[in-house]
Amino acid sequence: MREEIIEKKTVSKCFNITAGAIDSMRINTNVETTVRVYENEKIGIAGRVGACNIDELREEAKKNLALGIPYPDLPNPPVERSVDCYKEIVPDGELVATMKKLMARVCAENPEFTFGNKIIIEETQQKYVSEKTNYSYRGNSLVFSITIKFKGSANIMDEGYSVEVTEYDEDEIAKGIKKTCDSFLSKAQFPEGEKAVVAIDESLAGMMLAHFTADYYFNHLSLFDGKLGEQIFNEKFNVCCDRDPKRAKNLPFFDAEGVVSENDCAYLIKDGVMKGLFATKKQAAQYGCEYIGVAGASYNGVPSISGAGFKLMPTADDISDVVKGEVIYVSVSSGGDMTADGTLSLPVIVSYLLKDGEVVGKLPGFAVTASAKDLFGKDFLGVAKNGFYKHSNSVIVAKANIVNKE
Image (cartoon, rainbow, N blue to C red; front, side, top):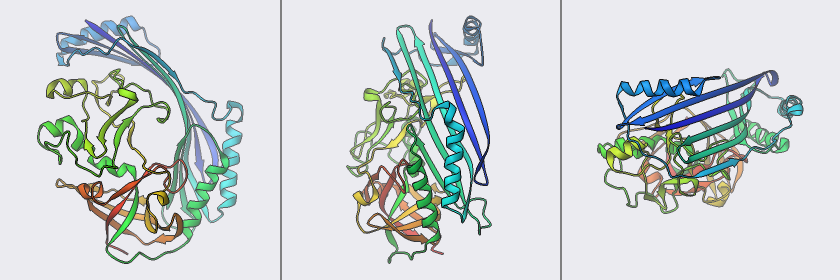
């Protein structure tokens, strides 16, 4: 019988923003402990939130083997590794005053707007122990998730500012918010033609995730059926699950099954070639494929696929480094979906016309449509590390169809 123990502790301090002001702070500490045992190709799981007796949890997990949940016993290599990425982003004694000062400045610099939602600083400590495998991680990050509302608007929100950082720079944050607000007040006209260069948040690629799971692929449901190991996208297109502590923020280098990828980065697409699939150890054993460290699990649940660390690797720092001339930057979209044949559709609420990286003005609403194979293939231009402002998500820069213009 093999045993795994996973311990996770998160401490978060959440600032609530109402009408541009910090009106409350909530501190939450969450402790989770999981014991998994494996015997005769079955798994038994027990978990607790809060303080627990590990021996009692172990006995409960053993009893749960009787549930007969099938799962292969695939031990991890005998490795010990500890990573501590924790930084004092803002001293605890200055945290409240610092966030109040920031929001006061943002409101003063953008009097035609009001602001809401959250600022969260969170620390994660996590351990994985099984036989001679012993991993530990500690990290933290500061997340700004700020809604922006034009005071003359009837909408709940019109724009947003979202970044995750491990170093605090008030000037950089304020600059990004002001750029967004100033751009919202300007106006521009669409470029000529039905096709344009667009810059869209990298999360758009997430619409394809299901097609890269082992279940989809080996049941012949994937758009890329039979293409493993073959070129399917532009040679500049690289997608990975990145848990490298030098890049990933507040994310352990190991997954929920204690799997560590080579160089802490598991590639699904490498230089346009389909290199891997999303698979847990169970799916890898079932289909005969690799498990590359993409499992997630609740404290008392069976491991399943997770998109944690999913990332498009940048080809340049800024949009203007990817392509010169006019680019439509998609800032706020609504829903969006991908059909079974791989056609992407994304209704766009707020966007801006850029020229050589500089904002020309805000565009009316429209929708983006494209074939996923074309968008990331022949029409793909690159991935910019910085979107509209520094520390934003990376953006996909590619040619796409512009339809339903207002």
